[in-house]
Length: 465
Ligand code: 5AD
Ligand code: SF4
Image (cartoon, rainbow, N blue to C red; front, side, top):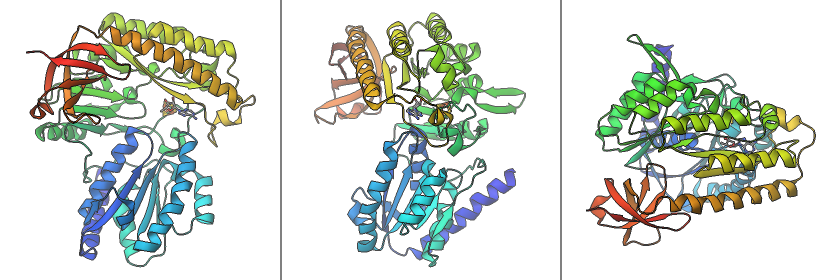
């Protein structure tokens, strides 16, 4: 298995060299990434490979010789976006003789591939979630006049190590620790398009993070569809579950902030809570995806916890680590959701008092059990509930922000503010944006700031002398 994996990576490196030789001058690539942080991280790998092959990034699609889109299929609007964009890409292809490549989650869906093949024949390369590493080979084939490459695997992919990577940021980095998901929440397409859970080896993860620390990275986000079911096996007699992995990452010098997304409440066991408690670098905002506050809906969603168990879990974590706050994901308008069910969701929101809520309107996904359920909720009811949840949340943000005023927070200075060149933007451990006056030389550093005021979407702070 390991040899095969290495051999495949070596083979792709050979293709990278071959393509590089064919691309005698620097060419430009344009990349569009949809969806979650895992996709962003996959795109960093795609960019890493492209840059090895003499392509350089452009933000201006009109200049592109190579257009690549990394797709997502978690919610509906991404589909409209893909097909909308393809018309634009066709024009660039005709003008610049550009190559068009489309990859990622949506390519694992049969109905999408059928539509692409039927109505968008000019797409050159189509690859799925398990064949991303083969981009060099795919490009080589196209450059050698193969008309079209379609490389999609239905089986679970392997974990490939040692591919080049071009990171988007020089202070914060994401590190994927596991791929796939075994949970089959009934609304979710992910288990069908990303396959079963596969964990990376702890030694590979730790090596990558140590290297990032050496390069000056301060903040690491550990990524996976279900990070707290990470299973890295036993190394030197030590069992690498998520708790032990966190402890080892926490010991890496230079890394100051550790985040992780997304955990599943059902796997938030006592050892994970203890690890977070003991690891001071782990961010004090924890993501605890609720999805719904109604026990009946949660059962239909196959979430494996009740309303009460969720609230108890939040209370238990808060008791162990009082400075913790929570963020969450909520879906409104799941099939059969009644007014009472929705009230239960609002009730949990009031009780847990989330600092951040990612709100989603339920979107039917072909092939998932929820799509086949009767009593789908009418659009206007979904939107009305969404607006009510949003109003409650906005009210809570202001209340929560007020608690920060007068406190001293250690923040990572991320850069100049987008809206005002003369101020700096930073983030607290709990992921709040803080705007402050200060010198550019502070960028990338951790500093103590006193919070002086709140402005709903950000806080203002003053550097502590
Ligand atoms: N409709 C709406 N939201 C969804 N999510 C996943 N699938 C769907 C769907 N079909 C949301 C969940 C998940 C987040 C990443 O996306 O809240 O936690
Ligand atoms: Fe989807 Fe549920 Fe897996 Fe998250 S845990 S990726 S929501 S199936």
